[in-house]
Image (tube, rainbow, N blue to C red; front, side, top):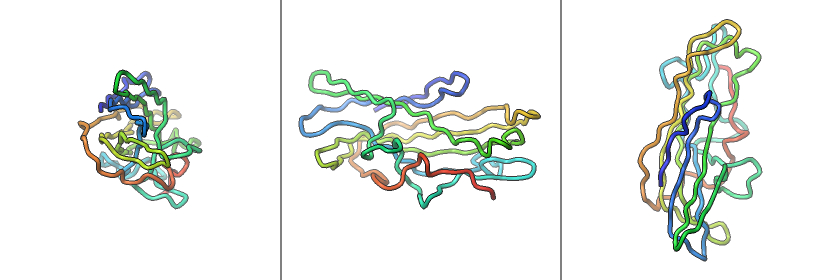
Amino acid sequence: MEAKWISPSGYDNAGIAYTATASAGSAYTVNYLQNIANIENGANGTGAGAVAPTFDMNLLPINGMTMPCLDTDIGSPGPAYGANFKSVATGGNVTISSTDSPSTGSPLSIRFSKLTSIDVQLFLRMYVVATYEGGWIYPLAHIDWQVLFYATGNAPGAGVQNIMGGVTADSSVATNDNPFVDSGKIYNGNMGWQFL
């Protein structure tokens, strides 16, 4: 299993790409399952996830969601992570690939031009799992990765300009440890910017 940073193109396409190869089987399919383990607002000491002269905000779970949480598509029929998912069988193996380009959404876009900093770090874990009929999953490996949304330096009327964030990934670990969560509320649609 491997994860690597997708080089940014104007930061809109920045994210991570995954590839993994596992033994193919007739009783299961190989796919990904992703958890967001934690979120840290003010990760670089700015005091909050979004700072402006007259308000501070943090990116927090809403709608009763708690961390860690599942990261999959809204309306997905199961826990599998499916963004740009591809699966190619070769001989007795299957190679799967996917990408992720996380975002925080805008902290009150009407006040975006007043921000002096954005400082939020997400901690994620992507699992390679064998999924059996009935939805039973058997983890094969995981990789921890982090995305830092970090920008400072307000330009009048434009908001923060000095973008310093990025993506890092640890080495993969072959393990059968269960995911933090494989059901429940998902990240997409259940996070929001909250005034402090």
